[in-house]
Amino acid sequence: QVQLVESGGGLVQAGGSLRLSCAASGSIFSINTMGWYRQAPGKQRDLVARVNSGGTTEYVSSVKGRFTISRDNANNTVYLQMNSLKPEDTGVYYCNSNIRAFGRPGWYDYWGQGTQVTVSS
Image 1: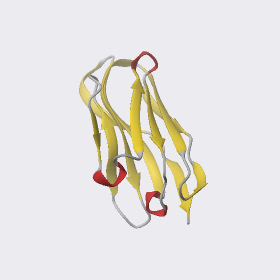
Image 2: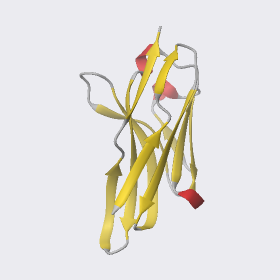
Image 3: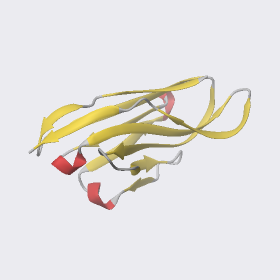
Image 4: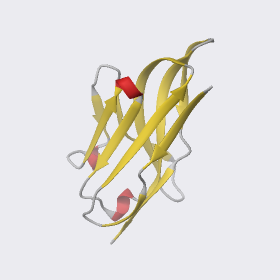
């Protein structure tokens, strides 16, 4: 059993900052990519940023220069530092991780429960 638990969402004014955290736990053999997705009201869930096991990062263009993704491999945790937040950053943020679990051959995507981020203008 693998679980992803997120924290750090909330309400912030435009221009403010938030830091999201996501910790993976359970029967984890290895973790490949860890990332964050965002789902705005009435829209599909889209990638915001991700980082692979080697530390290479990828960002959607709208957050480049404002968001920073990082990971702590020793604690199976990924972070998303969000600065200069804009109202269009509002949505539910989901943690995603590609994990190989003990006793389960292959790699699978796991999701957190989501955390709400609301940016007021």
